[in-house]
Image (cartoon, rainbow, N blue to C red; front, side, top):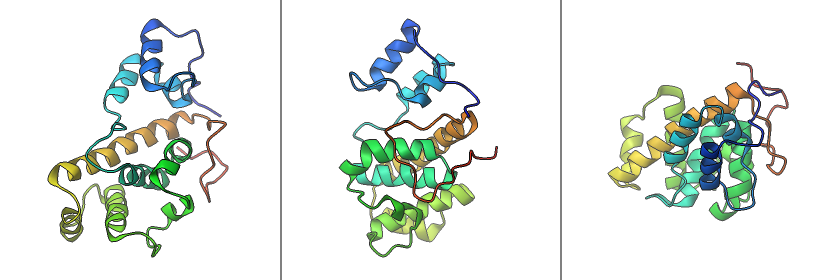
Length: 184
């Protein structure tokens, strides 16, 4: 059960303008965005700092960071949204592999990114040896983007886990996810 109910229409002009920028035409606003709409300033800031535009890293690597971070944080709502909207384009046909970073089918680059997500989640830093490996695959600007992306999705995970926003009806459940609400 949601702790903060998603805002229901009619929306203020300011909130509707944000939704229009965030959502494809004809698609209703996501539950998360409707929860954030209780604070239009936060909604705008998330919108502006979303990092879902074509950045300096590939879609596949971007989604790998987002999905792995959501797995680590238990953010099943956000995992389901990204699995539904982006996993096909990113080439993820076996989403359950994201919970198992040691799977041999990951490339060396992907394995390094998964290890980066794990290190950031557990220690808020990256060991020197892992940073050196990552530097072999990514420019300094891309490394900044990877870390910022992981940090942003920790914040998004906090929001969805604390608010307990309900799953989107079209979003898949994360393989192995608990059906119980997270304990907060």
